[in-house]
Length: 170
Image (cartoon, rainbow, N blue to C red):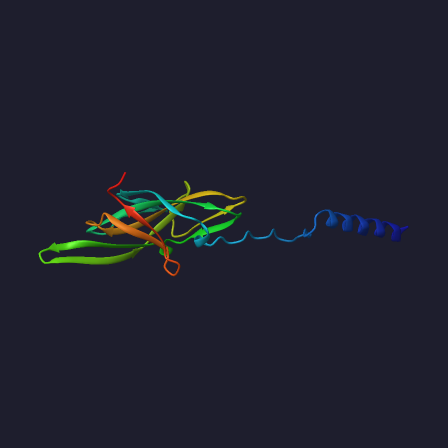
């Protein structure tokens, strides 16, 4: 009789796992695949100059002779997964005229200082998991010299993935 009970229990457990293949008792759920930023077809939606952004308990403000620019990027995810953003991934490349006679131009590059996904909070990193393909929107805060009105935001130097930003356009 004891042997029959054991067979029934083992049979039930075997049936439960055959109904849910890949499921195991006590096993952790599978981590979603990481999404590479180069897989997201990004475009600039908006760029605006702001006084500051709330970064935790403090505020991120531009240094003297700089302005803080928030660039909103939008793209499409073609598969589910986990998207992690780090500000240093985004760079602004720019130039501006420092004198007209003789004409001289100064060139510069800065890294992103903070990011936020959707309506999330600003931070030194942002991660979101998407369970289905969808559009994604996020913001990057960068500092540029005060005279700069146009620059390129670059998110993959090796692949040349970039978008022009014009602060004069609405």
